[in-house]
Length: 194
Image 1 (cartoon, rainbow, N blue to C red):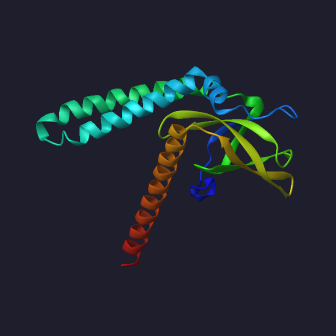
Image 2: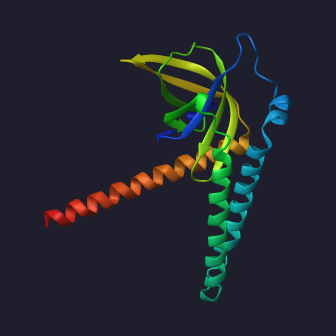
Image 3: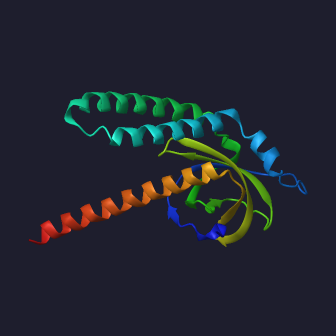
C-alpha cells in the first residue's frame, strides 16, 4: 500500500518537529527501532494491552460482571491520565507545533519559519486518544507561504507499523467524534424547526 492512501483528519495535536543536521541520513530500520525512547515504547505497549483487554471485556456482557467492567474502566482511565502526564514531559517547547491535519501517512502544521523541501526531521506526536506518543522520522514534502506563516506538510519515512495502527485508531476516533457531533447538531436543528 502506498503511504498516501491513508486518510487525514483536521485536529490540533501537539507535536515536536526537529530538523536533522544538513546531510544527516535517515537511520536504517534497525537503528531507528533501537533509538526510539523507552517511554514511547512503554506507551505503545500500554495501548496494545488496553486494546487486548477491551476485546476480552466485550465477551463479558452479562449484568453480573458490570461492577468488574466499571472497576477496570476506572483503573484504565487512571493509568491513561498518568501516562498522558508522563508523556507530556517529553514535549520540548523549542520544537513544539500544533497539527492542522494528521493521519497514518502524513501530517501538516503551521510554522512561523519555512522548512526546506526534502529536509528530514524527527517527529514526536502526542495523542490524546489513545493516550500515546509516537516517535518517527519524516520528510518535508510541501512548504506553502500563508500571510505571515507557512503550512508545512510532512510524510512519514520511518514509522513502526504498530505506531501507524495507533495513528489510524486516533484518526478513526476523531472522525467518529466529529460525525456524532454533526448528527447531534442536525437533531437539534430538526427539533428547533418543529
